[in-house]
Image (tube, rainbow, N blue to C red; front, side, top):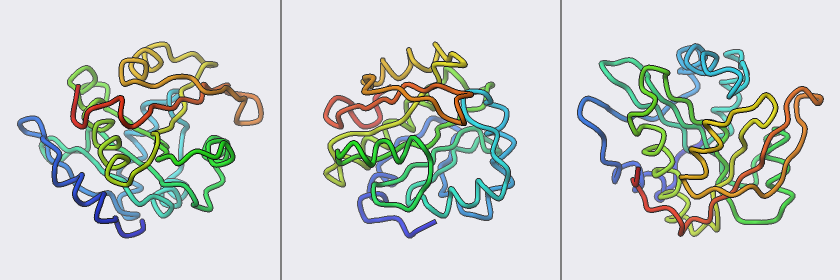
Length: 189
């Protein structure tokens, strides 16, 4: 993982965490630890071997874990534009020509869903993007296989669909989403 910018460090320091939850930066060494949490969220996120997760963490400048009782219960991996990252969706947003911060994945353990951790992580991303002067935060959500819960959540977070595309050789179709940075207050649930 590249060294976080001052904007990222300031945003991390400003996060207000729920009781019993801690936040820490993820490193490449954490890849094997987060694969189980990531893969448990399939098909909302792709199954990702530890080597690929480590490579993704190398591209990221803002990757964090939320822990409860020393167990990782949520994670965020995000990237600025300009990385040599071959994700079909990241490339699509890069070619779109807007100044963005890309969310590659946010994963929340099933036992923690509905507790506000996903909204907290999106609040963090929005705060980072605001501090960097970015226009929007981008991500994608599966349309096929469908993920209506995530589409509804992203709608509540201020995201609008700006495109769709087939990925993974046509096995998955995603909605490409963007939220203007000003539409979301940092830390709002």
